[in-house]
Image (cartoon, protein in one colour):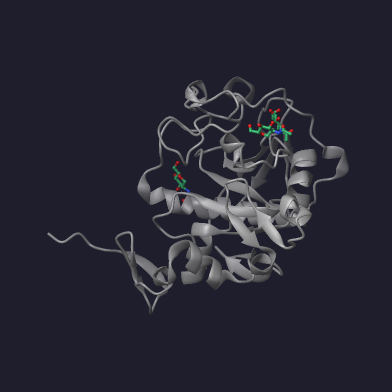
Length: 286
Ligand SMILES: *[C@@H]1O[C@H](CO)[C@@H](O)[C@H](O)[C@H]1NC(C)=O
Ligand SMILES: *[C@@H]1O[C@H](CO)[C@@H](O)[C@H](O)[C@H]1NC(C)=O
Ligand SMILES: *[C@@H]1O[C@H](CO)[C@@H](O)[C@H](O)[C@H]1NC(C)=O
């Protein structure tokens, strides 16, 4: 190995190797005792734990950093300079999509990421997070075989491989929306910058099914969906990589952000350039 890691963390070279070697069965990771800062030494270059663990309720599994809710404080001391954020999010998204595809976990983009996709198939420049969903079957796969695994990925427009951590919430199998502290089922974490992708599971609403209503789905963050709006997933591209998107994307986006969000050419101090298909930052008027 080229670098030292706590023995409990297993590095899977899912997609960076030529020939896209699939992680083999024998690489099934040992489970680390816990995921606190001290057990991640060797993977994190932080000299201090900047996670909000101490101030969080005991039952909360994931801890956002004390300096920004979209950073993992075990891996970063501060936010990235604004000009670096988008590039790191983009590489992280590419690494996530390529790895999930290699290990056969079904995933698709939602929320702000889907809105970015709608406009130009990219993460919006002012976004500091990425939202994805997985199926119930996929979260089980991730929990049983990939929890706390480290994946190396080299972006096409980036000179060296970076390491990403897959971490699955201990409470993922509790599907109750009352479990408010654990609405995020898993995270894909950039161990260099602390940025992460929130992964939520799309679950069958078994209570509705008991009442004879079929095709009702929900995620633990209390969002409800009709199966017909999500499935069959469509194939598209995001940040230059193949991606799946929900079937009725227009309806989902209009419900969440209003129809105007799909036509308005200025958002968050950016204007959409219809020639280049890019969001351009509005210049400050002197
Ligand atoms: C990610 O952020 C680092 C700063 O930590 C910066 O040097 C690098 O250029 C960024 N990477 C990308 C792919 O933009
Ligand atoms: C994932 O691993 C961490 C660290 O060992 C553990 O705390 C957590 O409970 C595990 N998650 C699942 C779903 O087993
Ligand atoms: C799920 O979480 C809720 C809220 O914390 C809790 O009341 C319930 O007992 C949990 N269910 C299971 C099966 O652990």
